[in-house]
Length: 159
Image (cartoon, rainbow, N blue to C red; front, top):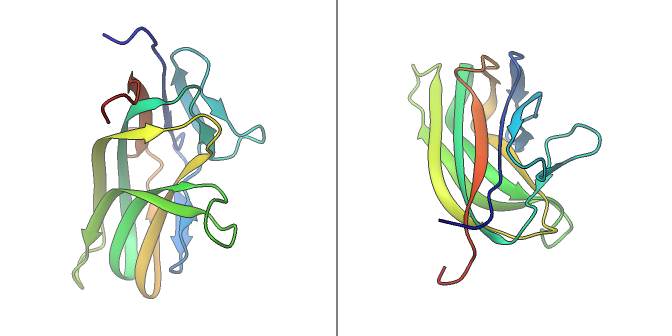
């Protein structure tokens, strides 16, 4: 049992988010459902960024429902680190759900659960990536369809 306990759970607060194009699109945090220890830092402007309050292995889950898919050949949810890419761009960090789409697919459920090493001071965000020619879709805002969260699991020793 870890001596440190922390975690957050967030969702889109019932608001659908339209997405289009092939550039990664940030998933907003419209509703902070709970912050167990009130110590996970979200962006001051209410944006979609967060930092872990302590180094460690964190369990992260994602559940995103994507609908109204048009012209997309795949859809992916992924974690990014803010501004840590070689040119100062956001760096792709970890896949949080992927689906290859057939021509008749107009919905997808992206779900994942993983344990990842998060570090204090690094800024993270969840993004959705569409592939295809002029693709578009919606991230379903219904709180029972799309949400994500993370919970502290252990320190990084042995990881």
